[in-house]
Image 1 (tube, rainbow, N blue to C red):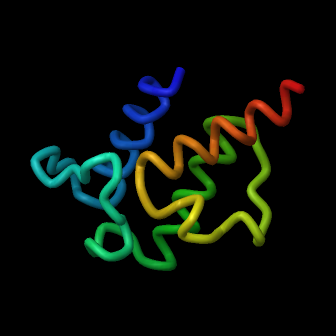
Image 2: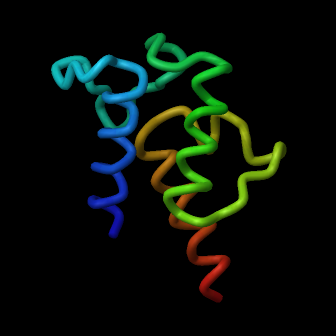
Image 3: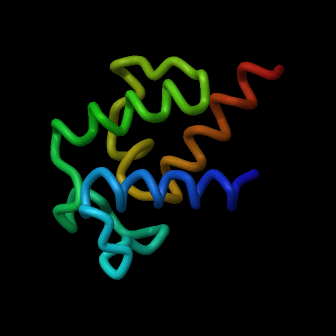
Amino acid sequence: MTEMTKNEIRNFIVESFLFGDTASAPADDASLIENGVIDSTAVLELVAFIEERYGIAVSDADIVPANLDSVARIDAFIQSKVGAVAA
């Protein structure tokens, strides 16, 4: 599920913030904020995508770079939330 989730996240980022430019897609570990891919408004769009796509709630405390600043971190965050819901 992790690779599929990463692909879904990457596709959302490319379509929503990079205007479909797949050549500019960030590496899994690249900072989305430091590389100018997302800003504070885009973070809110990303959170809405995560909540809708994966059926999980993202609290204000969850909206931190440690959870949302790269494809890999977003994937790990989603996996932890999905695992918590399933347990």
